Image 1 (cartoon, rainbow, N blue to C red):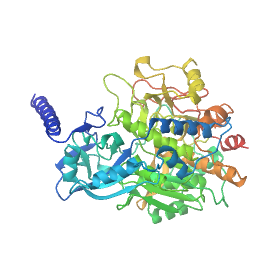
Image 2: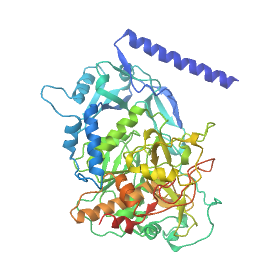
Image 3: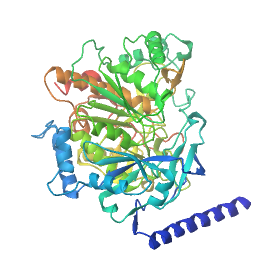
Image 4: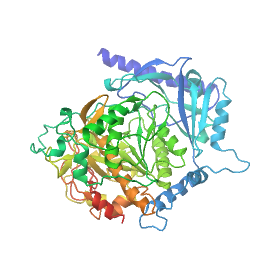
Length: 586
């Protein structure tokens, strides 16, 4: 009873705080509440700490509002350059062309980005520094945190993780709604790095004793990394034997690929060299490091990404893009300032659609994804590691929790599989923890409408209709090995461990795309670009993937989506079959 009483008191206090801020705004300069759909400022896996002090600073990104007509033109261009059957296929835009399309410079008119910078600089004691992207769509500002509270008419707090594997992090975020002055609000869509924090999780645990797997098999490739810590692991030898990609020696000067890293995660050369020596690969290194400052600490997530995109596609040059603020817009800033970004972008990051993610935020992310696709970039995201239930988990209403960006129509989402027979090459099955399902926010795009309709009408055992939105964008699009029964052998922090997750599947599939690009460049052709129209319109129907037809992604609880022949909401079209994929681009 005391706990319930305390919860009620805290709720009343939060309501009173909001009322006080609203009254203060009414008494002072007029302001508009931004992202009003965000009403819950508690962060799962984060604990609210002290209020900010005069010594604290906060970095935020003002996302410039785009004219609806300009955005419509961008989307039209995005679809045109991505359609393998269209006349404008692969007629990509340059960086300056994207900028001119969305935020053109016009004589006698002030750019929104310039207005924002000038407005901020005119606020006494607020701004430490500002910077604007080449695309004129993102304004990042370092602000005095106490002055920022007054400017945004909110309260800012320190937040620290409750998950032990992420100790040492300290992020400043708002504990109440935020507002912008009336003069500024029409120029800004959202302010990022102010209200969002990601769900933090431990690495997926080894479920090698799952009764759903056949417990036999000892193919040599699973013991090909010379350490007892990786006995029975997914290794570079396993991936190459299973998916059939070539070993590269010379690559085109145009080839490139990248991984995005968050949470202060970085790599150590010592670990990468250990991976080379122990797992028999010939090349594993980061060629370029970009991103937002801070001290990067060697971490399993980053080293998994680097070691396995390199295992597949080295020596194609690899860029690592760091963000210390858990922000997709930090990653976007790098791309929007780079005239020649890496053609393939692998991002193992996401949240549930309902977790502190407003519709405005998702729409602005989608605009960034369209900008990338219009430039010819292939952007791939991991689908998540909690099955249909998402990071929110299974709740009493039994409603599934789709992922974002996994549920975005403008990116390629990579799900997870594992071997049907443990430690035996060959048939794969759905990894139960692999994310998949249907967006509650975005409608099904035309490119996948037929494939999804076929799945829903296939006779496969579907969940109850009340648990998901059958008219939403469906995902994943494709998959790769992710399960923990034969976890990936990773050299990290001076030791070796076996880990799983779609954060492994994503860089593996991305590596295959990088090789396809390299083949295209060698013939004088353009990069693959946004992959999904090719996946659904060409490669999938041609049987260019290893079809996965068993297993359910229910994370071990209740209902989920069951794999079947062709596309399904558990594994998409399946896993890489490199020779067949290559045949579709010849």
